[in-house]
Amino acid sequence: MIEAHGLTKRYGSKLAVDDVTFTVQPGMVTGFLGPNGAGKSTTMRMIMGLDRPTAGSVTVNGQPYARHTKPLAEVGALLEAKAVHPGRTAHHHLLALAATHGIAPARVDEVIELTGLAAVARKRVGGFSLGMGQRLGIAVALLGDPRTLILDEPVNGLDPEGVLWVRNLARYVAGEGRTVFLSSHLMSEVALTADHVIVIGRGRILADMPVQQLVDGASRRLVRVRSPQAADLADALRREGGDVAPGDDGALEVTGVDAARVGELAAAGGVVLHELTPVASTLEEAYLELTADAVEYQTEGPADALTGTGHHDAPEGSAR
Amino acid sequence: MTAPTTTAEAAGPRSTVTVQRVTFARVLRGEWIKFRTLRSTVWTVAITAVVMVGLALMMAAIMQVAADTPEMSEGMSQDPGLQAIGLTGTTIVTFGYSFGALAVGVLASLIVTSEYSTGTVRSTFAAVPRRLPVLWAKLVVIVLTTAVVVAVALAIAYVATAPMLDTAGLSVDLSDGEQVRALAGCVLYLATVAAFALAVGTLMRHSAGAIFTIVALFFVVPLIFSIVVQATDAAWTDWVNKLLPSVAGERIISRGAETDALLDPWVGYAVLVGYTVVLLVAAAITLRRRDA
Image (cartoon, rainbow over all chains, first blue to last red; front, top):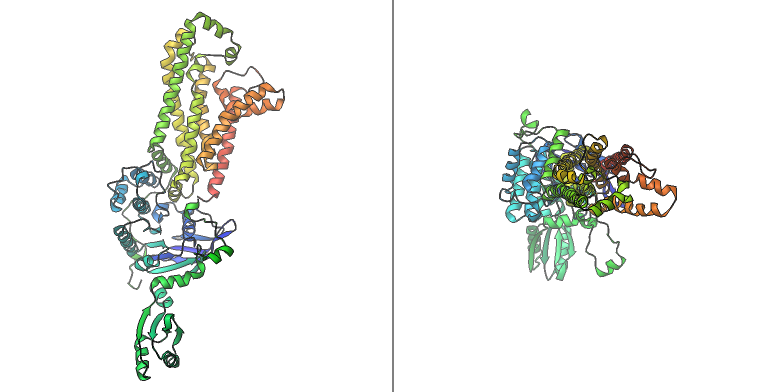
């Protein structure tokens, strides 16, 4: 269980996380979704006590993280891949962390086995691929068999098999009654893994709901219809309570009336149809719609670029 | 969430992994594992010892040759510079201390700064979120390692140079309190330099900056001041010079002061310890406050 209250982080003049309040429940996977630079990593670092909040507070399992006597048993975190000295072996890195909690070396071997690192565990981390680094980060997170698992972009750099493995791991761990908080900038990833989703953009919470609700609520049930008698059809649809907007190349985009009903109305009114297509908006579209105003690094057109607001400060990840 | 939960399930998952409380002793073990599992660290320590012994042997050999050559020994006995140093056997045995200070200073700063440059520090602080035990554990590791390695290097140098120093009439006299103080002082000085550099590394967090600071403070500035002091009569330059961390701290390895230009051995060493304590306190405060 993670509880954040009014959590705020300011870097100089930039507000990275802006008065964020949320709860991450145990027993399910909670996705933390947002575009790059939205404040996901900063929020996760504040949960782990690595960054000091400018205002507000956050607790893990009822206490600020630093107050726990066995921190690694409370939270296991993957905050960035390869947060390891390149000259040290994966085995020794894990061994050093295990020593701080009196965790037996056998457990180190166990998490190495579990994350599929057995073949490279005694090699120096400098030669690891991004995917192996990610697996080592997950091994570190699992070391203390924690009640809460925090994974920042866990599938970055993993091959398809690795992605599937992380997904299953997250679901399995949550199934044991633990808390899993997993960030991603990919809606599809969150939809496949998470039960609940918290969407963040420009440091603010945009949505906090079950994944299914986000999908249902944000997606528009759109019907594209094309007809030589478009005006007549539009009138009939509007009378039915539908919303009609002219789409591309003369088609009508109808919402509020499903495809079957559009067909019936057309038949009843003797309207010829050239096309009748139900268009379910995708998850990705729902997400883009939600975060449209909150994208940190928007692709700007040439005109915008000249008058652009210039997002030059990047506190996320690489800049530190 | 709709499934009925028994009380056992409500209490959370049962763990089969034994996880114990974080204690200073455990943090210390973790830091020791980190220290000994980097090849660069192990090599630096080994090379420091080898070079310190090597420099002592080289100097002893020169002394032996000088003693065998009448013109040279006469020249040395009349050289005011050499007389001022007060050349004894301990001077030869501890001859590599300056190199040792450089090696130990760089190593101690890197122990902290490399954690920042590689991101290891975030794993470290996730495991020990109170942070300060990490600083103290690193301090214990680097100070003790330095002390042991320097003591061993001096012991080897003492034994290895003894025959040559006997020939040169410069035998180390372990019944002479001042010589024993100088030998022990070499261990103390280098261990303190390590603590000083650890604090600088913690404050600066960047390898290049920390190493530059250590080299400048311990090697470049004293060199400049040794010239400035000769060139001017201004009293303040004398004071700045004798209060420089290296000039003050090194007094414990040298003979007692015969001029006002330098502090007494223990006073000088106490000045270095004072700087080190202040820096460590500052390092501890910033370590707790800053974002990792």
